[in-house]
Image (cartoon, rainbow, N blue to C red; front, side, top):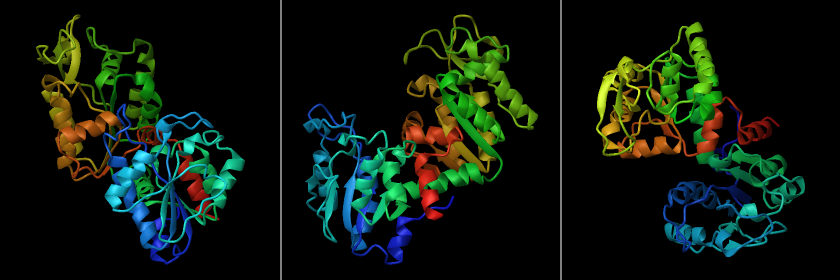
Amino acid sequence: MQFIRFSDLCAQGLVKGQRVFIRADLNVPQDDAGHITEDTRIRASIPCIQMALDAGAAVMVTSHLGRPSEGEFKPADSLAPVAARMGELMHREIPVVANWVDGVTVAPGQLVLLENCRVNKGEKKNNEELSKKMAALCDIFVHDAFGTAHRAEASTYGIARFAKIACAGPLLAAEMDAITKALKAPKRPLVAIVAGSKVSTKLTILKSLAANVDQLIVGGGIANTFMLACGLNIGKSLAERELLDEARAVMEAMTARGAAVPIPTDVVTAKSFSATANATVKAATAVEDDDLILDIGPETAALLASQLKAAGTIVWNGPVGVFEFPAFEGGTKTIAHAIAQSSAFSIAGGGDTLAAIAKYGIEKPVGYISTGGGAFLEVLEGKTLPAFEILATRANG
């Protein structure tokens, strides 16, 4: 995928003295008093900002925060807490500028934080007039917010249309590189793990991957639906009986390509959904009518682990069992460690997946951890994200 990299512009000396507008993702969680409870996104955004400052630019940064109403700014919507925390991390005062659309005063070497962009009327609808006003504020627009890459909004898409130069910041560029490596030009075998409670929320993803991957591992409630589609009893486990035909179609599509959807041969069951429920390992053919399947069994986990260790590329979205309960974490833990031990390039995304990666301490061995939940899922669905599309268009003239 062709796009202009902000790092290249800096290295070429093209940023000095320029007005740089960075769209970051500073949408951090806050408590009821407005205190930031987790600052990962702020920390992740600083390298791009520092890169611009080091290159001698006049730097403007904006982001959304929460769910404000357009045209109705409230104190709770303010990026002031973000500016305070970022200032602590960067050891500098960072002014917050409100009502900035019609003009911003910022000199080379200075950094200002532009108030919550979603308060601006027309932001979410990608209003052209608003987009042109934003573009007029800068010489270089830098998109560095992958979590918003699946939305065509004024501060993510419209400004990129009209800015003199539109490029990808280091965070977005890393996502684009990882996604291209995993899905556009993967080393084979390509193994995808798609897990979750419902087939319906991941059906498009499953269909898209079925046309491309060599092994499609399903887990959680999705696996239950596939087991049911194969004629296995799943007891009172979570499943979507109305989607059995769709599950069969995915399996048939894989089989037609000489690929497969491995169906569990053993499972871990309980009589109730509880962290203290008694866990019983049994063959997939021995599930009773009052059983709940809460994890894959050790035999299945070992088989999948061997496939993952032999993979060339791994895409991971979702734990394969109720890993939050110790008695039902075996499958997810085995798969996590197999991914860590594999020589394959791996890319992982999704909130529960990130929680599992953190729980098992495999952040370093995973090739790339995607931070954009919705954007990552849309990529797996085979969609071209608006941010990727407009940056590629601008890079090609």
